Each structure stands twice: as C-alpha cells, then as structure tokens.
Length: 276
Image (cartoon, rainbow, N blue to C red):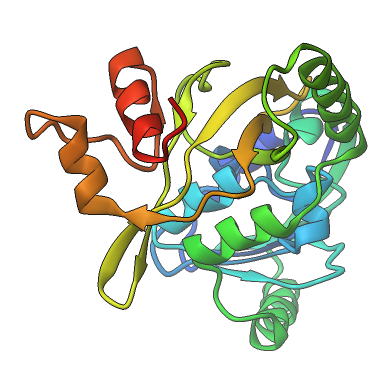
C-alpha cells in the first residue's frame, strides 16, 4: 500500500514513520536538520557534503556532526540529488531534503510505500551509493571541508564591509593583515577585542601560533554560519607553548583553542611576542 505526503512540512509525518522501522538507510542531497532523520548507530546516510555544498549552506556540518555522534555511518557522494529513505517496514521517495527549508518554506511531496520490491530496490540503490561514495565522513573531514569552502556571497559582502571599516579605524602597522575564519564553536561568538590562541603539535612539542585579535563578527541571516574577521601580524612566528603559559603567571592555565577576554591575560600573551 502506498500513500502520499504533500504540502508544507511533510517531515512532520515522515519522521515518525521512519522511526518505527529498523535497519534504516537514507540518501539525501542536503542535510541541515539532523532531528528530521531518526537514524541510530550503524544506520547509513549518504549526503552531498562536498566543500562547495557546505559553502553554499546546502549541507550543515553541525547537523552531520550530530549524526556522527549518534554512530551513524555517513558518506559523501558529490552531485547527489536523490531523496530516498528506507526502513525494514517502508520506503519513501520524493522531493524533500532533511533541511530547514523543507520544513519552513517549501512545499514538498513524498510517496511512502510498504511494497517489498520497492524497499529492496531502493535499499540496493542506497547501498550502491554507499559503496561508491567517498570514505566515511569523520569530524576532521568536516572541519577540513568547512575550512576549505569559501564563504557564500552574502558572507563575502559582509566580510568585505567589515574589512573596510577595520582599515579606516585601524591604528596597527601595515604588517598586520586581516583574515576571515568561520567559527564552528558552540555558544556565543567571541567579541571584538578578544584574543584567539591556537595550539599545534610539532615533533612531540607544542607550539602556540601567533595570537589573532577579533576585529569584527559576521552572522549570516537565516543561517547558523558565523565568521570572525581576525587581525594577524605576518611577521610573527609560533612560540613554544610552555614558556608562554608560564609567563602568564601563577601557574594559571592559559585557555587555548578558544577566545580570551581577560585583559591581564591578553596583555601577558601579547608581551611574549613583544606586542605591548
């Protein structure tokens, strides 16, 4: 027996239907809402998570990260356009991606059926995609994909305006340059004036990259994607981490890999590079 789900927010009916089966498999071109897919450990998802797709907001790395945390086997298949979902009880095929747009503003149509041959055929289709897709997605791959992807046009325009504002008001020497960085952290964004410190490991030794100061922040409307405009001194090299940490004083653990707000700590870190 087959039924048609059509109209606004078909996921309101589709998600509970998919949740009642086992051995779930899904192929969706774009995924920006993990909660729409009731996938569990060892379930399979094929999605387009290529840098270009991530850059344009088609697939959200945060949503893929949630599914990875749940133990889902996620693969990226470039150019995927299918929207197919299969469980041990039913199969669904239609126009709806697992996306905010499909829930909030698009009118979709999905056919749901319990026909065994249809389920078997679509299972074979998804497994074939899986076997020919890129390697299993990891969190490192998501970070690299996000970092390699250029900002979308709306972000580039906003960042350009932020650069112009910063240059007009800047008191820094010409050796400083501006760098855009997409913020994938949780919680509130760093604020202008905060310091970013990144730690790296080289030959079993830890080094602290030259500090970067937040000049401006950009949030793209209708998106969770956020950018920082950072000020960096092109003449500075990395320093060994322990001497810098010790210089902060009193054995205080210097926060690394996040932003620093304490003016005293900022001053002491900048002093290590003779910037104050």
